[in-house]
Image (cartoon, rainbow, N blue to C red; front, side):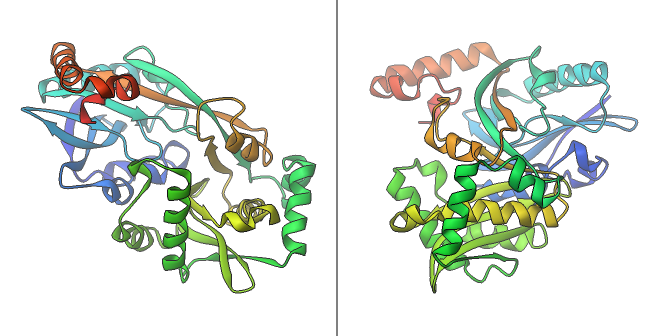
Length: 340
């Protein structure tokens, strides 16, 4: 069994079939989140034709490192379903990361690949919230009548009656307008810095994912009132970033945006269109309720806290708590709390 740490791993990913991987794992996606402090790496364990890999963003902490998976979904994936081999590979990867001076890592697992399951014996895996996926493998009529609630269908009809026009832009002509709309939406919601991106991020996204992404837009006459970035692999589709004008929310902007984008995913041959979850882990969260009006196909989102050097981690956290007592209540439960 060989293990390596690399900044180029697409050749390994090419050996996965489409059901065992997704766009979140490719170099082009993970490297969107590189900064001066954080660089993209991938730990790869392989033996004959079997591969286990995990891309992440690595940061330095003194003479050590920590890591977290990129925005969205990630974690460990394998190109085979041999549970025994995967268990052994995770153990070998853990030994390797310890030798390489890694203190800990924070993982956001992939809801559709269900890759949290084989990690539960190795480190702390925590259920975070439910998410929603539309089964877009069904005929369009069955998606409409079998998954979309009657109230939601009425809102979609209302949006069309109010003259709202949807377009899937593969040329991203409205990107500049979308960036402004997205930022205004995040500011209105009081979102953390985590949800804001510099302008170059969007242009890099478009450049890297042409052919695997589109910008869904909704206009009232000429005005952009709702839009979202969507991306897809051959079988998995994702609702990535979204912005909307609150002034027009009663017209069913987001209802039309997601429905028409689901149809677009269906036409592209996507089997599951993942909408994500709510804005919190609460079961009655309003955003989750809205997404559930598109499907009752719930997925489970897990996070992972992988502590590799307990003594070093304990010392880091204790030093941070002593220096930042006012931040403990808000950030103390986060694995990477000392980064705040």
